[in-house]
Image (cartoon, rainbow, N blue to C red):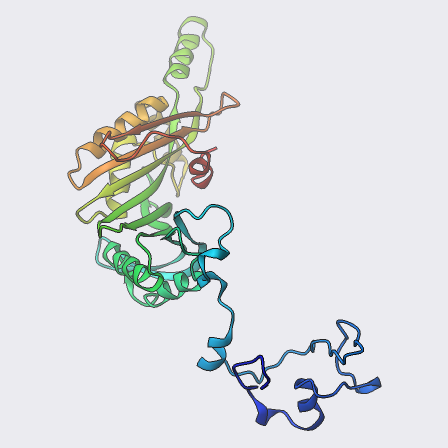
Length: 358
C-alpha cells in the first residue's frame, strides 16, 4: 500500500489480483453476497471501509516490513508509567525445552527443563524485548549444559538486551539410581534441582545449586514416650514419623555435581525415602528411623556440619520442613553459613511453595 502516511509498499502485490486486490487496497467496497467477511463497523459517509477479517498468508515479513512495525518497548522514556526507576530483574519464567546435561560420571542425560531468564532494566528504558531472552537461550539449546555454559548464555543476554545484570534458573527433575536397603533391588529417585547463574554488572559470575532432599524424620520425643508406655504399662505404641524436605541452596566456586550434594545430604540425614521396597526393606527402614531420630533442629545442624566441611561450597542455606503426622502444622527450621553479604535466614512463602514445603 502506498499513500501519504505509509513508508512501505504493499507486500505480495503479485499474489493479489482484480477485485480482491482492490478490496485489500481500500479502493472499493464489495456488496451483497460478494462481501467475503463480517463487517466490523458501518461504512461512513466518507467511504470508510472496515478492516478485513481475513487472515493474509501472503505477507512476507522482510526487513522493510519489520522496520515499519511499532516497537513500544524501545520507545522513549516519556512512555514509562509510574516512577522512572531501575528494575532489578525482568524477564520470562517457565519456558520449557529439553536440555542435555553432563553427569558426574561423564555421561550425559537429556531432561525437560523449566527456564527462568531475566535481566536488569535501567531507569530511562521503557522495557525489554522479551523474545530476545528466549532466542538468546535457544542459540545454545543443542549444546551440553553445565555451569560454564550458563555463563555463556548470561553473557549473550547482557549483549543482546544491553543490560547490566542477567540471571538464569534451570529447574529439572534429576534421576539418581538408588539401591534398596536389603532386597538388592534398584530404582530411580528423582530430585528437584535448580541451577542458578547470576552475572553482575561488574562481571562477577555467581553460581548456585538448589537441591531438595526428601527424608523421613522420626520424632525423638515420640520414641521415648512409646518406650515409656511399653515399659511401664505394657502398651504397644508407634512413634510418629513423617515425610520431610530439606531445601539445600549452595554457592560454590569449584565444580560441584548434583550427585555430590545428594551424597552430602544422605550422609547427614541417613533416612532418605525409598523407591523399591519389599518387606525386608520396610523393616530395615523402620530400624533406620529408630537409629537416626531427629527433630527439625537436628536436621539443619547435621546438614550444616557436612556442608561446612566441603571446601568447594562457599556459602549455603538450608530450609527444612517436617510435615508433621501428629500435628496439624509443620515444624520448620532455617540455617545459613553466616557469610557477610551471603544467604539470609528469611523464610519466604514462595520458597516453601516452590519446593513442596507447606
